[in-house]
Length: 144
Image: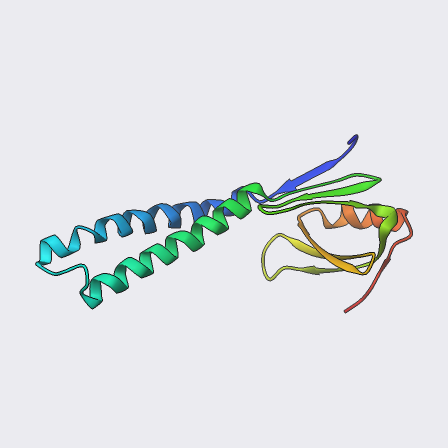
């Protein structure tokens, strides 16, 4: 892809990486808790701690891996979207319309592309560049 713009979320995944590490360290240390306090693994407090740290760890691991693998690449003819579980290639000639909105207070803009009756969500920092490409192809923006 010549003259393509590449965007990802690796920098946004770093806090989730740190949370993952802390949660799994606390999960491992929770196995020492019954020995130190003369409790059983079947004690209610121990089970709650094990479950909570495991759930925090798994959720933050998912968020970290999703942010690390998210990648958007677009040029004058197509948009490539690669996420943790899928890879989508959108030809600009197939896009019927789109909407654009800023995602909360982050640096990302969410583009909803309507392609052949389906809705595809793309997050990117490069709002102006993508809108210029879309207007060059006479794709209309639908206002919410």
